[in-house]
Image (cartoon, rainbow, N blue to C red; front, top):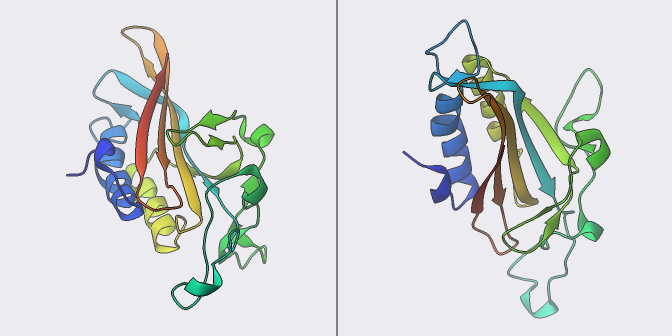
Amino acid sequence: RKVYKDIDSIPDFWKWVSGPFIHTVLRPDFPDQPGTFYKYFRILGGIRIRQVRVKEGACEIPSAMEGFADVCFAPFSKKNEDKEDFGPLNLETGRKEWHWASKEAMGEGVYTGRTWIDFPGSGYNVTIPLDLNEARKTIAHLRENNWLDLQTRAIFIDLFVYNANTNLVTLVKMITEIPAAGAAIPFLLLRT
């Protein structure tokens, strides 16, 4: 079983989020209290997963290397942040499914990553339902429709957890950076 700190690729991220993560925070132990885990913790609100992306073709391939690659994806910067809709076409709206939202709409601030890149609070947001079966469907839909791809530069999972024994609320923020060179860098941030 994959643990969070062992994630080193997008496929690893999907294995972890659809397995250990979702089965920990959405345990079926308390069917009448969705979002309760380890007896003491209760998720407040929901689980938000957000990504920051770069524009396709935001870098140039040197002419000597043109035969080796068709497109490149640059490191993240404010200048090359992707804000275009992407994903499968929604037949009801005629728009692609996933839409960029500003930091104001998200209520997020800047996060300086382990690679010293400042990631804005903007991006593409999906709420994971607190029902285990619905959460599995949502995650499968994201994975099957390539919600994460070569344009992804950072993935944020945010949830607020309440512990009645200590009367504390904790922000759990799991950040997975995807540098332009590949791989993945996971980091856990807790704020009480």
